Length: 128
Image (cartoon, rainbow, N blue to C red; front, top):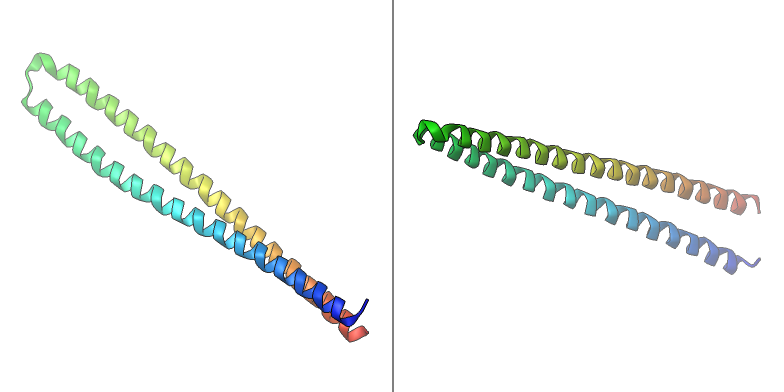
């Protein structure tokens, strides 16, 4: 194999490493954006849930005694649904964190693979 072919092969392999690394980093960025979006949704949901609970408390303080049980039940149901939604947000964030960790591991493995490739190429050059 000629020196030019060796260099072209080396360059091509380096381009492949760079492309794979860039894709992993883009995927990591997309996950971080998704995490921020979910966290923003959580905050908005929390604010709405606080307002809703305040409204139920106001109604409970101002309703007729015979209506009280109805509004208490609605408020309890709302609180239950809010806790369920919060668990779903938490599960989504946990899944995204797992995916992000996997992408970081893939990136590290790819960097090790790249370093190994470079060392082997250097050894071939020095041994030749």
